[in-house]
Structure formats: C-alpha cells, structure tokens
Image (cartoon, rainbow, N blue to C red; front, side, top):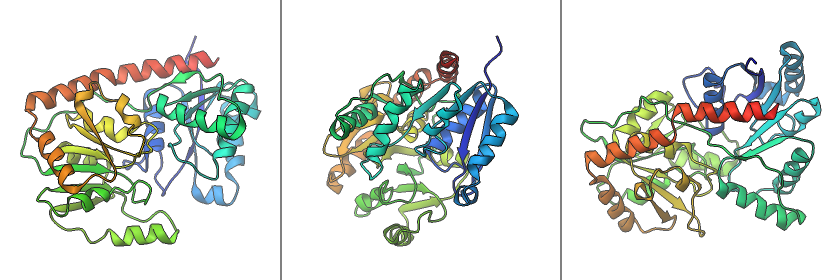
Length: 349
C-alpha cells in the first residue's frame, strides 16, 4: 500500500511561504517539518490577501478536487481552514497547537473539539498540560469534557545535525519569540539590563499587529544596546547558530502549548529557563530528557535571582552540555518524528 495523499492548508503569515528560509512561528515551523519529512503532503498556501478577500476557501476547494487526497490535515484555529473541513467527508487529522490562553474564542473553540470528534475527526493535542487546560475550560463552559481524543504528538524534532558550540560564548542568555506583548521576549532584556550579563532577543523584523499596545511594544523595544542585543528577521539557520553560541535559553511565555524553541535549545546543549504563571508549570517541561536540564521561574522573579540562575547554568561543563544535546536528539529524533506521523496518518484511514 502506498502512503496516503495528504492535503494541508497553509495560512501564509507575513508573506513567508512554506518554502521560505524564515519561520514566522511554531505552527508554521511544524507544518514545514511535516511537508519536508512526510511523503505525499500537498500544502495549499493561502495568503493573507486571499483570506481577506474570502477567496481562500475556493482555492482550497479547487486544490482538493484537483489532487484527490486521501486525508485532510489541519492545525489552525480557523474553522474555515480547520475543523469545518470535516464536511468533505474524508478522514481528517487535527493537531491542536493553541496556547494555554483564555480568549473570546474559548467557548467556540471547546465546542469545536467535541463536534469534530463526534463526526469522526482524529484530534491530537501536543502536550498533556495543554489538554488539561482546554478540558478544564470545556467542563467550565459547556459542562462536558473533551472526549475521544486520539492522543498526544510532538510538533517538532531534532534534525540530528545540531552540535554543541565549542568556541567562545557570545551571549550569556538568549530567547526567541515574536515581538508581541503576550510572548514578551524583551522581558529578558528588562530583567538583565541592571546586570553585566549579555542577553540576545531574536525576533521578527517588522511589527505584525495594528493594535496600539502592540505598536507601542514594538517601538519601545528598538532602544536596546550592548550588552542587551536584538537580532531581527534572521533566517532560521542563523537564529540557530546564534542560539548555539549562547549559554542559556529562556522561554518567556508561560502559556506555550509545547515549546519548539525549548527543544531547539536542548538540541544544541543549552539548559533552559522556563518562565511560568502562578501555576508554576510549563508545557515545555515534558520536552526535556531530564529535569536537570531546565529550571522553572515565576515571571515576577527578581533580577538578582535570575542573574544568579543564569550564571550557575552557564557554569555547567562541556560534557554536561554534550549530554543535554545527545539526550534531546535521542528523545526527539527525526526518525521518531517520522514514525509518529506515519502512524497518525495511517490510523486515520
């Protein structure tokens, strides 16, 4: 039996196609990994302009009938390019990436989950922490638990070529994230500007929101200078190289559903600091191959305390860094990733 033909809507963000060497965010990174490593995946790129003009649905419809797929694969919260596609009466797989974030969409979101599985859709979450968050909100808002999920799948993997950097460290600590108030990557600079530690924020080159508070956040964070560095709009491979030259990585967003940047840090031998909300938990904890490889800290941690944690983590040996990288690459190998999604898609038939 040949591998099934899989059609996958891809909502282009910030004009970055699935073929771009730049990555907009975690969902886009995941879809690119699927496209590059799973056979017979057909991405249907739908631009922001097409979505605004409401022509994206007809574009997907045309590609659907032209390619005659066996499976539809979705990841986005959008019902039009997501859960509503179950109307095609074809096996459909939904890997939910949504963060642990309450929004005005929450009621509609939790209703979609059960409607989707009731109609035979294959629903996966990316972490137990994420599922528990949405299940608790489903019970709170609808009185019903999210039922009949198929399980949990990792949305990223190591490629096996990551190496621990052997040269002189360029940055004491790094973070990667979009310039949004929710993700707040510049939390790192604010916490460390009164120290002598060097920090680097790797983010997008332009503001992606028209909201006044987001515009202000973007503009306010143009000011940083040495030893607080900001690198904008780099290709993914350059982001990874700069990450590898750092001592520690920080995940500044407590509401991650999984945390691809944490995996990327572990794969290059960096220990990780996970910033948490009042729960004290972070979804990226399960990515680590050992609890010794990360530390959870509250968002309101004092600068002095964070400084000491960064210094202690930077003092780990080269052997320890190599062990972090090796264990992460073994746990999240490309082979395991391929096997997982091969099983996911074949089980949908």
